[in-house]
Amino acid sequence: MNTETPKSAGKRQHQPKPRWPGLGHGAGMVRFRGLVPKAHAAFLGHLTHAQRRDVCAIQGTFKEVRGLAGVARLLDLYLREAPFAAARGRTTFREFLGERAEILHDISALLEKIHRAAENVSLILPRVPTLNLEEMSRDDATTLRVS
Image 1 (cartoon, rainbow, N blue to C red):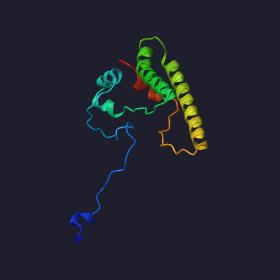
Image 2: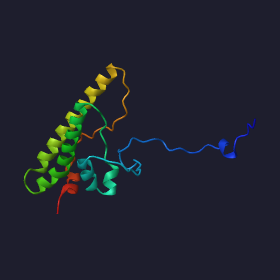
Image 3: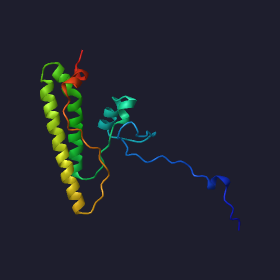
Image 4: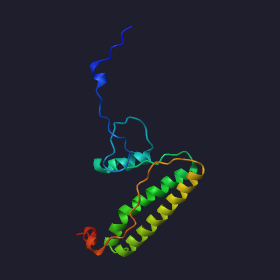
């Protein structure tokens, strides 16, 4: 019986740390061939490659999770379009930032509630990025101006 190991077996190969998919620019992209619902394909088709890296999928089989997916899509649309509506005068930036802060606070409260409930049934959840609840200072407002 031959018990020799190849020379490369002794060397340690560097393996990158796994990252949560869809969380920032560190997310890896893979080729995919398959079928997706038309709404998802239409959404992905309008994104640039850089924007696709930041897309995060909500996975679940329960009706409540599908409801959260719809809420997330509406929130994404709101966060994308509300600054433009403020620039057109349909609302103000102050109202937008106030509503955004209130929404982020509610999301944080929901996240804490879900974590407590999950701990009660001994579930270990993946780390979720913390939300930035700080309002922007007036100095940072220049980045919001539309010319």
